[in-house]
Length: 330
Image (cartoon, rainbow, N blue to C red; front, side):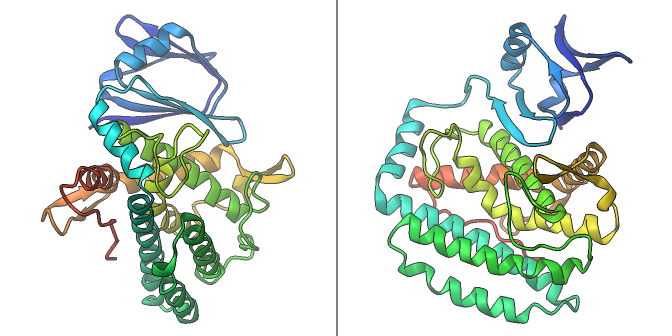
């Protein structure tokens, strides 16, 4: 299985013969390209056009974050699986308002169902979230009446706001109080964790889309506009609750990340390097964790589930099978 490579230190990456070499003041380390699917850069890393040409040939994505841990962009190699026919089908589904609305609503239902599953998990473990679950159910009932994507996203935003109210009850830690969602920059530690985790999940979804025939520039819930990628944002909505939120609860519950793993920067709060390393190590473990797939009848990793979500959408667009979002059962 190909791996994700995470680089936190300052150095340079270059092509050496038929592989990559990461060089720092401490020495050289070779990156086996045949076993690498993506590289995450968090440190100050230099590279050149020859290196980009090489990873493009090897179909390796390069995700770049600044020294504060904010996502900057992705070097997305030339699409090797895209077909003109598939792109036309994908665009037609977007341009048809009814079809786009139906697909967008599926993403919203998937995200909502997985948020409810997370709360039910903790309710079964004695956390009082019944009132929040009740309020979420009433919001779900309003979704079918939505006639526009904007109305749909407004309900989804309200839904997520209600859902976040459960975080303080689940975490129950004075150093990690929610205090409302804040971004760019996050204003407290919990928001810093959510923002960092979500941004990494967006890049993971992007990597999985790259392995399919779909074009990541054409999304359905998130408007296709001047941002480069939007379909990965759609796919990630479904998996945020069960991958990122559950991971945050685990990291804080087990004291694997504490207040010492944060620092104040740019009028906000960010994870420091140690915190980012811990988060990514545990996220990688979670992505390789397998669950029993109901239809396939076999174990499938969470990373594979993300890819399968894209395949399901592809079949829907082609008119082969109705798309149904993945919903966790635990």
